Amino acid sequence: MKTTLRPPYKATARHIIAEGEYVVVEAMGNNMTPDGKLYNNRYCWVCCMGDGKLRAINEYMDTELVTNTFQQ
Image (cartoon, rainbow, N blue to C red):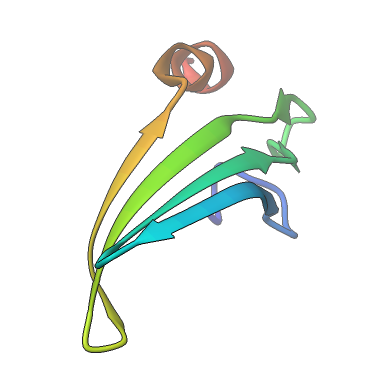
């Protein structure tokens, strides 16, 4: 991320749903590339917790936005 996004890196949680060992977070990024392009992706993180620790995470996002923003 240090080479693709300008700090500070931001993602704001909009919704958090927890049930059992799973936590789902819907988030919105608010970022910019070093050359000044906006990069405000939407994320859904499905987290599996165990013993108070993050055990696994699956990330879903707009991959077309990634391609359009970072292709050279």
